[in-house]
Image (cartoon, rainbow, N blue to C red):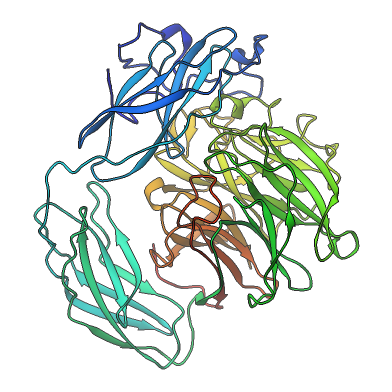
Length: 576
């Protein structure tokens, strides 16, 4: 059986089940209802998910396809479907009687494959183990691209924009590396049918200084061209740009995820896979673990210690709020911090948020109304996003003590619904809540969240899919997944900053009414995957990387940075 990824619907209605070994085609996508009520499948008495699939293996691998096989899950009624993912992206679904599938791959690109089982009532299992697969190249290539030419540099204050003419290659140029004084400071990357950019802006340099730039080209098999002829740029006397510099404050072997700054300036951040919280001075000195969060478990994916928030009355009550994964769910707790984490004071505020290998959400943010808002993922079960009785695929709102606010729209913690995997929350000066959400394989989205709003998942991904229902809330901005896959957001002086993983960049956009204008991008390829961006107490930004080990639950297998980004007062900057 051969299945082409991204060409079949992600949810196949039971009425269309067919014999194993046959491919479904022409099935309308997004069969889940787009209403505020519990999906019909959830009305069944069956609430027990299947066991996780086991024995995932590759039985055939070529440069264009992989054949996966696995052992059957068990269920009290019966497995109806297997959902096949790579790296958090749903590729396709097959019949519960099918235990093998052949899927298209990208040559030379490592994907982590896994499988979830699903029953007729919509209950979804935990994920199988991850199977990394790296397809061989269809032909060996030892020829490097041609050397980039016609390098030029334009100076704007302490920013330098470098441009060059495109290189050629016997197969394809896949990217360029930009070197400043001989050290790599950024890169551009292309996708199929979309060549890599031939421009790069280096931001926040020292004023009145010479910088020497060269560029190299690379292809898919790692062949690298010679360096271009150099160009020298002399920066101006001061910063005139929105971003005036970035300084590495500290490094980490584990993954920094949630980060907050206390009123006295102390920075606290969580180490996702070590399950603890670290405190440090704003300059990175006096860094120390303040304690381990109780009852945390990884997911061999993206679970662990996730979002952090500080009580609005922290100076008197010392509450630190934590969103974390357990062996059974995601939950929100609060623990007092008084130099160390006082774990004996722990209060569990919200339980039952769905967990899985991916799609755990995790961001926390206090609003100007004094309520705590939380971004909850769908736990890789898209149907729950439309079920307002389920906490998955939602933005949640709770009182500081965990109780349900009287004005919540559904009588529970749900504030908005129809979300896939939201991981960014921030409020503007008008008190509006902005949310950043991962798409599957088409679009990421930025939303303005309103009480009781339905944001469309799984019928809609960004503005793609079945989005005609007038009751759905449209995003204020979408981004191609390849250029985005963004996690954290922050708002400073009504400018939105977005930290992006796969896109290897930070977006900056000005909030104008109900729109985002003058979208700009910074640090493209400079620090690679960016996870969290937070305001500093002095009006700048904290920025964290997530470059390795963020798709497993193994502690200390990464090499991350926490940076302080200095903001300027200028409105203009490099355009996207």
